[in-house]
Amino acid sequence: MASAGEASRIGKRGAFVIPSRLRRRFGIGEGSFVIAEAAKGGILLRPAAVTPLEIYSPERKASFLLTNAVGAEEYIAARKEVRGMSLDASKIPHRKPR
Image 1 (tube, rainbow, N blue to C red):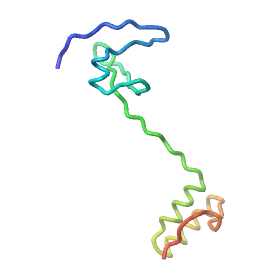
Image 2: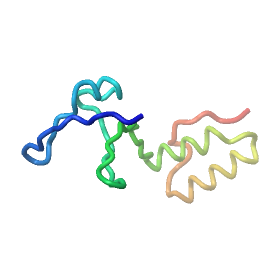
Image 3: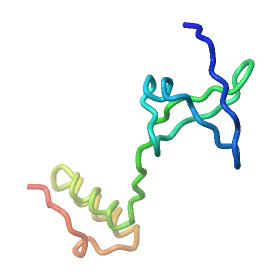
């Protein structure tokens, strides 16, 4: 869908105003994230979805290992792996398998 563009002036630090019609159309509001990339003939600007990244501590990883073990054999293996992480499985909050 080709349409006539609207001119915008580049301000300090490279800031520019996206016309309101386009902001509404693409759901871009104050604080929204966008991706700018080189494209044939210019710059492509598109909305971006940003999700937070959680970085797990060794203790949290150990909790996952212990809690997700199914059966006694996997639980024993998980405890061994936790020991290999220099952690004490008895001090890690977790649910033991039945």
